[in-house]
Length: 358
Image (cartoon, rainbow, N blue to C red):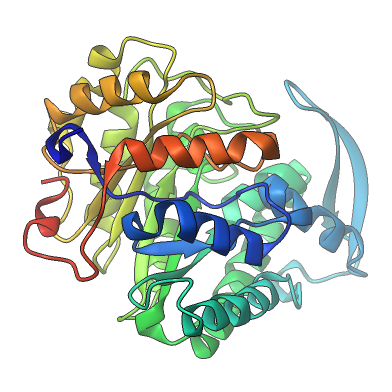
């Protein structure tokens, strides 16, 4: 198959349902190591369900109390609020885990680099949820501003610890932007607790994006949800994704190095992908389209690649969302599709790479 028929490189959104970080690093490096510029640790074990790992942390917090609440479309959730007498503005969540996970996984990543398993140019990718995401699934509606504010303090602290531990030129940080998309689309799990939703989302993302230091790559994963392996909203086309990507490009006060957009496989690809013609990314932003799925195979993926190339000349590929809710025995097949549908990338980015998404 000619390289012109394939995408340029591979991106992993985050979760990969293998045993542990070492198996994730070894498996991905073996099958697609020449197609990646960054690798996540797979968010294995308790982290496979994304932000839900924060719920037990909040439930153990002495300054928070729990209330069972019925959430339409989700079920009964145990939602949190500050206990009576606790100053919401002083709520300190303490250690929320992400820096510790990163330190542990980076030790394995670095060791495998030294053994030559992972190529020297590949960066260690850390995926972080946004405060809006955690708040949406954990906070009682009247307590959402306080819980979000606490996470707006806690997550930058975790990021500071990560960037102090991992060399900047070996690190990529990806913010997972899901509930924000649902909010601006009018399909949130819970109603926004702030006015002027678009302005509120962009202000928050500008702060989070700007917190990633120079020298560390910044990535954005746009997501329309993958609760219990089902989408939270069914977009008929990529128009909303393009609009939000363009707005984030303008709002975030530093370059976005890579951007991931999900692609539905169960709708007409030509119609779904047509809005990509309006995508306006910075010249250095690498675009990855999430058009690989465990519901079909290589031929269908190549068809979506061909349709996307009608609007975007150069892009990489990924799955629609993380693989964490996918059966582990499907992972090798998915990785083979990634490999066969993509071409290798050069160890160093070139001027041609900088044209991705423009």
